[in-house]
Image (cartoon, rainbow, N blue to C red):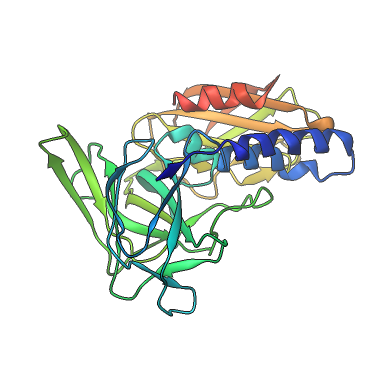
Length: 319
């Protein structure tokens, strides 16, 4: 049985209201933006089933397929579990949402990655107690495929982030699984390619490959139109047009008002979207999106304008 919820959307609106009433709220963390993007109703769903039976080929909102065998889950301490399981799934295939969700694209040794998408999976019992995948078991999650066959591998988020909180703005780094593989195949019945992931642990899971650039370049971005810019109230991302990478420009130089990458990782001459999102007191939201051809020492100015969260969502959803 599937149950869909818009609780997260309502909660986001409530968070916005409370932020506007309290000038002392720590607006610099962009809590409302992160809450909205990481918990948006577009990609979130819950599936309830009996642990003794599991589920077969359950079609998710974003067209992923989920198979869970019988008795896949145990209690958190490893003891046997009987009863209903509630699995929460967030599928991230859209590049814009991957950027906002900090679900991109850097390996644990700081190498840039190109991802076909990421999925967040958690499991609890009806009382909300956390469950885990039993030893020797796995989930079978099939992600609609892209154009890089037999190159992607399975990665787990290495920072122990489970369901990210609104205040957590940390970038995800990813560890390649040494045991869990990715299969790329064509389903003749569905008429499409899939990546089949068989994770043995819950949390954030990515289907990706390391990017090897012969002559990587960086980018610097100055955001105009927002007062009192800082690295805590403004986030800048670059999202390559080809592929599903997304990088946050974490470095910020206050003197020059420039955001930049920690290290060069973009292909010279490639087209990227530059996305800037900022917040101010009274929780005004500012947004900019530019299409840029990247070259050596590329530096651009992007003009952010005041928008609402729905407008940001609509823009990112089509990326």
